[in-house]
Length: 208
View 1 (cartoon, rainbow, N blue to C red):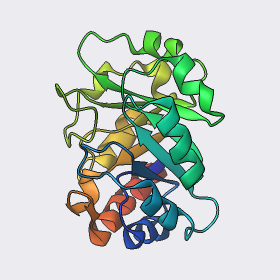
View 2: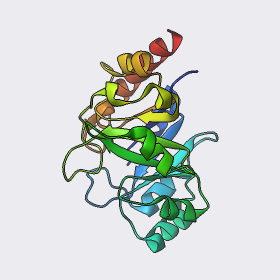
View 3: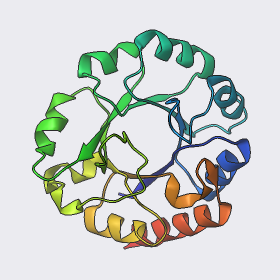
View 4: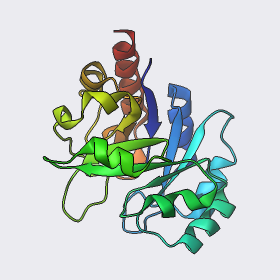
């Protein structure tokens, strides 16, 4: 099974098109105001309306209120939700959209048990833990902490770039990989050359 790719932190149409042309399966839009990759719902809607079909659009939230999430969904019409805060399964599944739950991995975490806490999630996204930072740290974590039994069900994030993604896919064989900072010229601005290198490495690893 090939590893899928999600490019997160999209703020510009040109970056979205570069990602899609390179082969992105999904694009992520960050609706968390403290993030340097935050995008307004109106701007995200403008970008999404110009995308080709068969590209999954994802909305990232961190402990956001249900009312605000509903309003953003109406504005953007995104396909998939991604929760990076302390949201419970009951909260996550109330929006009539499929969702993925992000977890920040620390030594000693029982990831199988955490997966069981969100049986309605389409997948778990595993990211590096950094105090006070809900995601997008640009740091990797110890992949050996991921139990073999769940590796095919997870989306691997955290510090991935063209130099590391091939090894990640070969070692872990995740369902998908998620990248943001690893393909940027600066925070919130993607680099098309880094995107291409990233996808070249994904393609190479998927053949092995």
